[in-house]
Length: 253
View (tube, rainbow, N blue to C red):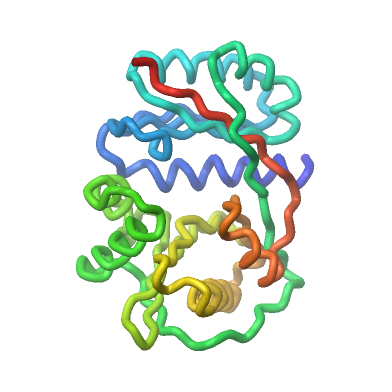
């Protein structure tokens, strides 16, 4: 198995851990594919990941049927190998390709670069959880009540997703989440609100979190980058291993 498909498997596991606590969650999972549907009519909260599964085409067809039954939009991310076969099927089913997401890796040989200090606190105490939710809602311009229902609820000691808040001189400045699987960590919800951006605070938070996990034995980290976050990740030493096509299925009216 190539590295991209291995990472897709880890992305599947990470998405399950990230969505499992959401109210109204419906998950369909194979080793290489996952669909997660919620009660929210927003595409960001209804997700599909497709890897090179022998039945990826059938999984895609069933995923669309279920999304249509629940009147939900669907954001689909595919591995390049899966997209070769599934792109025509996705188009026939009503998906529109909306771009791509760089799949990036921070390998065991990449040095963590020193950065400005921030205080890092794991979001477990209800007050810190609330702060993390506030930061995520502000950074991604999402309604706070939706973040509370679908993200705050997963910030527990047993969820499998570990969320951290960084505090600087001006208080809480950003968050990042890590979903560990063996010696690899999936990084998600890297959130720095606009007023704290371009000050090195997000960089400092992520650097310290990676360094801490490395001391505990984690060797590799991966993430799907946004256009806004790509320069930060590249400057830290993350490398793009694949461009993952991203497709959107609009909800039927």
